[in-house]
Image 1: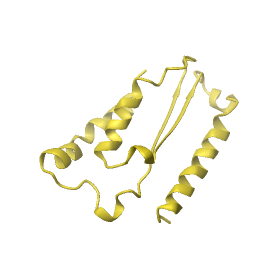
Image 2: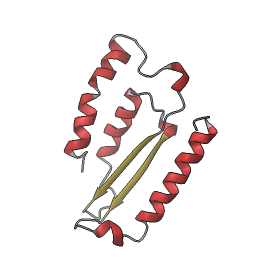
Image 3: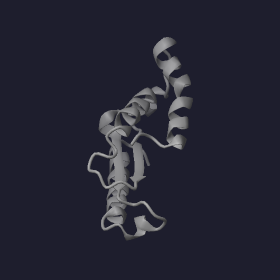
Length: 115
């Protein structure tokens, strides 16, 4: 599965940053913010396939690259098998995965000097 329509709109609207960065050779973010940004992709899917998110990841990587979020500063939380309303609440690891991701992001931001 690819990106949702809402995520695709965000990616499409970032074209202005792509033009600014590659055509005009202008910065997308201030120099003092480079390396101090984290990109987080959160997605769910009803399918239980192991590779259900594989098609979305290249678009996410491209988007974060355009807005100057380094790949090493990108995090993913992708939960499959949650099709019906409330299924995420019953998922065996979703809450713990989200909490772990939050802790990791907070620690990383502190490490790079963002408070």
